[in-house]
Length: 129
Image 1 (cartoon, rainbow, N blue to C red):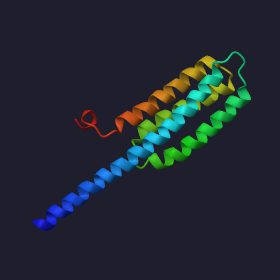
Image 2: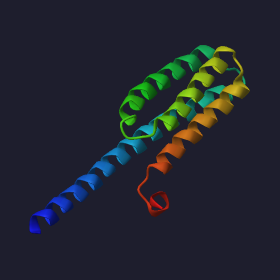
Image 3: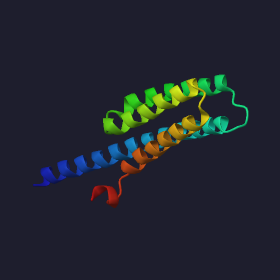
């Protein structure tokens, strides 16, 4: 009886610690990518857009996303990650076409999905029930 209780407590502690680690990783990286996307948005809403600079920032963001996505795919639904990927591909095409309105719209959709992923994976009562 005592041995089973200890094993259950250890398993619960491991689950809580693992959840804390994954939440911190997710929160930090989503904030980093969202901040980078917001800076890109600032570049796209100015009067004279430097498209080469915007493209360079997009590549930096996309590289960071690919690194983060590879790790987050272990503990986050792939559907959610693919939505961000789809938005980033759309953003790339609108930057290539030099369509700032659609690029900003796609960028905002990517930020929304990122924040949704962060909210969805928080450990709180709303997400449990």
